[in-house]
Image 1 (tube, one colour):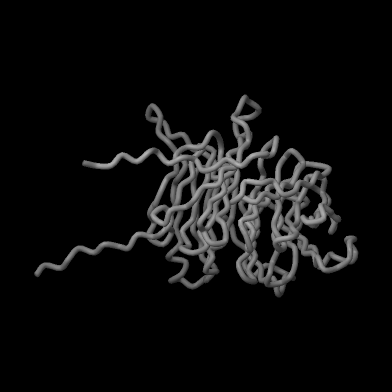
Image 2 (image 1 turned 90 degrees about the horizontal axis):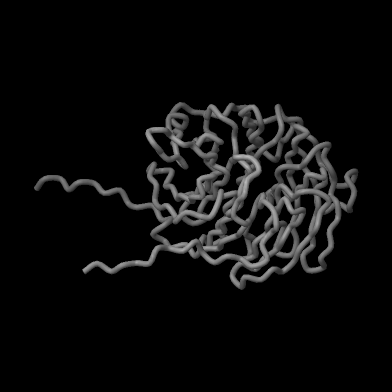
Length: 342
């Protein structure tokens, strides 16, 4: 007799969610704290395990990204052009500096001790948060980009910048004077998200047209022969392919497998090395706007939040789900070789 498992739930829904679209969420590197930025002009800090809202910061415009500095402070990128430092314990904030247009992405580099921001003003800026407040004391450098910055990702001293127009620039943070590599996306449509592999050998890039490309930094022929792209977040209806944007990606910190989230409301887990889908979670109420694994890979935070890909229409409320991750969902399956004949 087979045992009947109840269908897996979406995970635990966090109370006090943002009241408008969720732009990003990230787990801390030190705890199960979760930082969330939203179009409702807030950055919220949750204890994801305890399901408690620990703090909230209100900005002058929609907040398009956020990241941790350490467990007691973080940074935010806002459509009001400002880059802010947030100190959670004291509920205080200060402005590190500003761009000339909305700030779309923000990352903190532990390797360089710098904050890196990307903006729709077509620049990348690096900031030293140890400087006193005020742009003239914190700005390390401004680096022009070919187009508006859409997504950033860091691994060690490498920085990958994805912009409008399908440009991808790869930098070494120790020498920002020019990109180490200037590339074009191998996908034909607009880039949504770029995420570096945890082992530092390359990056995954997703597009609005239901595809993900797996790329490698090493320009040797052997390494470039390993790159590939695959279709995902699609469905066939009445003989027609319906294709959804892939908004979010997150790598598992232990196994190097990765999750993708799309406007179809699904989260899929992939083994990039073996080119296999490992798992699909049951459908979420609306588009997946952001994903993040906790530092030990035991939790996955999912932002179920309509991303207005079909314009303004009635939609499910914005919600954050935190799910416990089972090893079977994220661990690569060993390759099975046929037994040789005796």
